[in-house]
Image 1: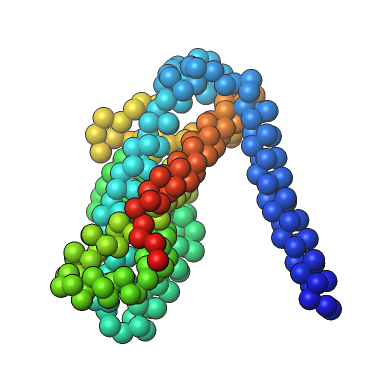
Image 2 (image 1 turned 45 degrees about the horizontal axis):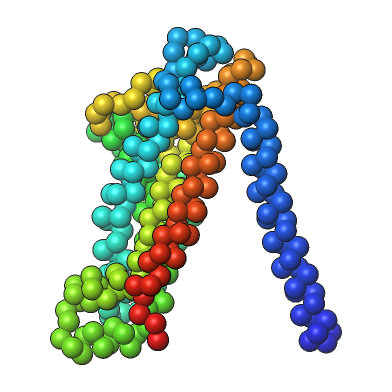
Length: 283
């Protein structure tokens, strides 16, 4: 096979794969939107479920929308507090042995690949051991464990791209590890770090399995960490299992709202990355 033929074959394969991905994504969004349209209304996003909501009567999913943001925001905050130091640790040459760093990354990759239902079961086991009940706090802790490897590895891949001569220049000027991390590495990687945070937030807000056993479910907006909380994925799960057609339509409306939220998060990540790209030091 000549180089020209080989290049043509690979170009066709890449174009075909790209078109296929776009087509599948468009098909999912359109199919959900068509089924959601009859149930979409202002009441869906502005009201909590009323009596008979799960039998097709009035109310909305404000409790699930609010609960999803509570869980995702809390989990993302805790994951960043725990994960950012780990990401900087393995890229600031605190650990001299390359093998140890590779082992850390290997275990993070394994944790990333563990199904979220396993984290949910683990969180449920911890709750049983300590005698805790389903609550917003239990959901936040479980989702935090789920997204920590995602956030750490996403930030790690960005930090790995920082030129070594930039770090060496910082050290040669007398900067400490912490000064280099905060003033050089963080500034250089602001777009990537923001993307990692929003990526983790998107995974947290869209996951159902990790909160299935830990958050519980309620028709009310939680007022404390000990209250049960509803989330959009769980609302979709419970509504779609109803035999009432009106409730099933509301499940698709909930799915459409969740899809829109995740698309907004993805677009925000792109826009923020471009906005803070100017802070990078180019070589």
